[in-house]
Length: 192
Image (cartoon, rainbow, N blue to C red; front, side, top):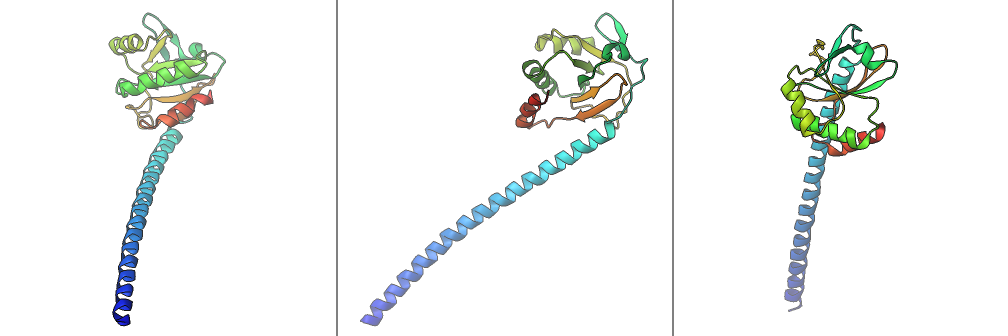
């Protein structure tokens, strides 16, 4: 009888141990899957960052010719005249740029940054695109257009970007914001 009770107790303990181990293994599996998912996200972010850095490195230090004309709705001036002697932050976009991205970056500039030394520049020659952008975003600042032939291998046409340009007309610190990273874009607003 003692052997039977002893055997039943051992079997119950083994069953409890088995249940505990199954629960523990499942918990470890969930944690491991979460770690793998986080690792894959970090790898993807790392790849995006590498791409952004490469874009920036290849496009940095492009020097504009001082006889390039910049156009407004009814006038034109030289880039040298527009920039003057101060560094300017440029929000550049093309007609191929994601419209909602351009709108979002403009709104961030309006709401968070001293707007005095900012230039809105597009390679779009379409007055329809420019006037639509101005109307939708209630833009009071001039939106300049240029026929400057960017080295398009170095610039990404479907994504707006920021860069600094100074009196020497050299493009510096080109920055392509991540499209889907609102935190990065909010953090950018504290830089200026």
